[in-house]
Image (tube, rainbow, N blue to C red):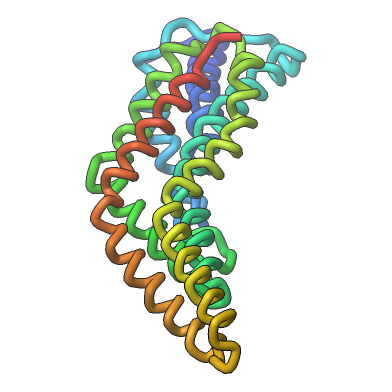
Length: 259
């Protein structure tokens, strides 16, 4: 008969709870899994299953006594690490959403918005198309397995007995917003420049022939030309995805620095 003492039971409990806090925070934030389309029970079950797989790989874990400040500090550290890693992956997906919004506003499709079921907000059609395409590429290239590897490797780089994320990593997390805008601008730059040239051409036409109804001609032409440029730019979408995904993975690795 298996007999366990109270200290052993407490150690096993903390051995399960500490990685669960980090993995659960990561699962609740990361795209595709942490969306409104996935029920909370499924996300929690996935976090528990992954925690059970990670438990045997963990070294000795801290076992604070009672409701001590050390207990609250460790919980906060694990939640912060999980949220930070999941947020960085979320920023990676939002690069393509923002790029689609930049192109849509330039070509006159900014008003064509649909409901995004994953986030519960309204986005433009082109952004939703880019987001769906990015998700398909992400899954086809085993990006979900990379996410699992990242959260598992984080226990080796940032053990439970060490401190949380360093202050430098938190500044990198804040600076990821500027990286998101820069990546979206590079993604949308070919279409934006092409449409800008078209608008300049229509401006010259209006100056040369004021009797032309430029709004009746320019609006549908700009929209059709924008769709054509978007179709042509899809040939390099995989290359853009590889570049942005590599930069995002490097930024995720840069977050895992001991304080």
